[in-house]
Image (tube, rainbow, N blue to C red; front, side, top):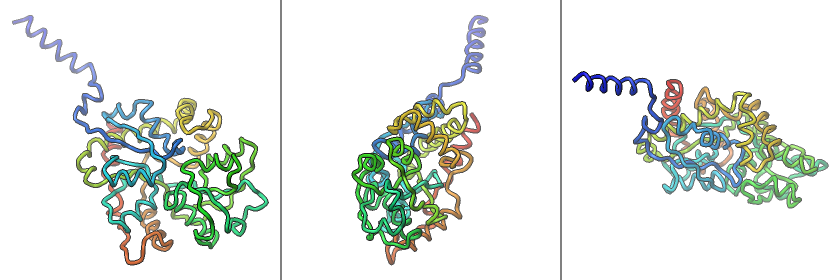
Length: 337
């Protein structure tokens, strides 16, 4: 009897002193497939690779697969079709999909500060008037870069998207400009130093924030029925992303993050510079869900004015567009552990 009691006590002590593995804490957490956009991926999406490679998804019990898509527009369509659980897609696209097509999508996490800008490798022709009639590199017509170009032309240059020729290049606009195939492109901030590292000076014509101070960048989108079905998996995915963002924001981790960021095709030096620049810019947030109600509501109205919501269609409300409870529960999970 004494031996049995001692054995039971030893087991109890072991259970108290040895922490459960993350997967044991969430043995039934459903798998979530998330699409970071671009081949190679755009820089904002490195947070997903940091979460995977540094073990943050697993730390919070998530079973997360990253599946790259050519762009956020194609990924969002795959979410609608049920081929993906979530995608990083432009906020403007989500708004138009809900309003124009009645899709049952919702945003669960945001990246509020867009870095889009129209640039050229011909500094002698770097005005709004010079871009008229020119070929401009975008991701795909109707995609994130395409919509951003439309908003920049309307709000910043007082022109129509029909006044330029859109050239679909996925996430390879900078490469096309380096090769001299085009001289104008819709660029991210980190595209500029990459182009200039090849001896071509880039002149910025207009930024999206200059044209529209209410502009919102990207959101992680999910179908509402899939979100209800796999809610625990989504919560654990966002917990991993929150933790990864905090990891990225710690200066002592910048070399590690820059190494992971080479997945974007940047050299280590360019990746490190882009990381430092984007952290200063505020591209990623970790202390809120990245979807401020006033900004989102103002941006919905901007989409109406810009013609991205078709005539006769009803724009989504903030409550239709955003589910703040996933981030709330994810943030609580991070704080608890």
